[in-house]
Amino acid sequence: MKSWLCESFKIKYPIIMAPMFLVSNTEMLIAASNAGIMGCAPALNWRTAEAFEEALKEMKEKCNGPFGINLIVNKSNNQLEGQLKALENVPVDFIITSLGSPREVIKRLKPKGTKIFCDVVDVTYAKKVEEMGADAVIGVNSGAGGHAGPMPPSILIPLLRKEVSIPVISAGGVGTGDGLLSVLSMGAEGVSIGSPFIATNESGVSEEYKQAVIDYGAEDIVLTSKISGTPCTVIETPYVKKIGTEQNMIESFLNKNKKLKKYAKMITYYKGMKLLEKAAFSGSYKTIWCAGPSIEFINKRESVKEVVDRLISGYQRALKELIEKN
Image (tube, rainbow, N blue to C red):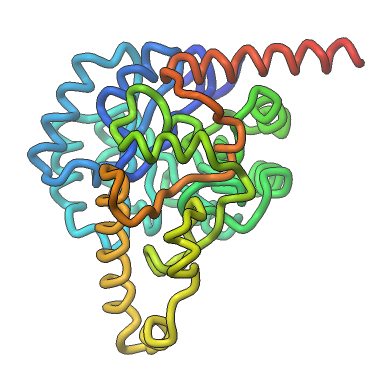
């Protein structure tokens, strides 16, 4: 499986285990490196810059391959400066930036030898980050979990490849080997896959969260603006049905008010993240669980390696069938 991602990072398969808020952890990234792919974790999954730096050191020591970190680069992340300092002290192989300008990240971490990937949902932003010096773009499509993009991969990937000269990695909607083959056939240099790894043995979330990923499917994924102020995909549990997915009249008014919307969004984001955190690690709390539609293809508990092996064997089978047909 030759691709820019494999050749640049010396990995066996062109797969990034996507950074997932509250889900990704040190154990998962170590397992990803052992399985021939590379993992990425949000810096915000560690409460302090000190704990984050210690985790970086542990992963440097124990990962048998490259790994990366996801940074939220807008004002909602009040820990960004401490995270950047930790990454200057303990450089990683790559960074994925989300929800803001990567300029400062590129300026400070690229000289350390770190590759900078930037989440994008359209051509306009992709061109901007290319001009800033990004090494690749991650096209977040409509099949992604969390903050999904508006376009399907069949439109977004060719569009990005046409308009930017840096490599394009696809994020969203891949849960099978057939899906992996399809996305790579469009010209993506790699795939970022998240939701299929939520129910893995190495994941640290609650058993109830993992079981929900197994029990629910694509038709149970809904968009809600009540978590971060921006539409986010979650499993439609009975609690989500009860509270609804749209902001109430007061929340909506505050988010449209020019003077107040910045503060309203910060409050919504803070409350939403706390709600997600409690739900992720407790079986009895209000159940709001983030996931994408690719949970459709998860029907049992597996290890990270078993998920990777299943994806690759499915890819090889689909490729063989395609060759035989032609």
